[in-house]
Structures are given as structure tokens and as C-alpha cells.
Length: 72
Image (tube, rainbow, N blue to C red; front, side):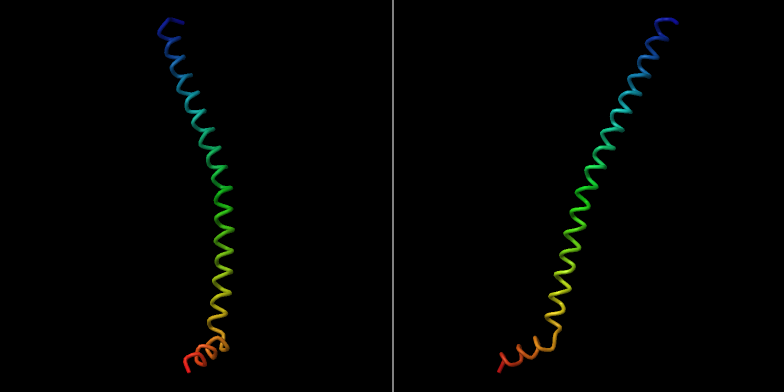
């Protein structure tokens, strides 16, 4: 092997290592992000339940009756 061949192999190995390092960093970021997404999904589900409860209260006939009595 000549000097240029060794230099070429060194450059290829450096690029390969950089690619592998970037790949592992991206993989870790995606794994950490999914945990945050799960927490956000749970919070959204909780908010949907609260909204459903509020809708049930507001659409209840007794709630409408109370507002009509208060108007008098």
C-alpha cells in the first residue's frame, strides 16, 4: 500500500466513524423524545376527560333549569 492508499483508507474510516456517531446520537434523541411524547399524550387524554365532564355538566337539564331560575 502506498501513502495515498493509507490516506484514502484513513479518510473513509473517519467518515464512517462520524456517520456512526451521528447515527447513535440521533437514535438516543428519538428514544428520549418518545418518553416526552408519552407524557404529552397522557396529559391530552386527561384534558379530554375533563372536557367531557364539563360538557356533561353544561348539557345537563338541571344546569339549564338553574340558569333559568337565576334569570328570574
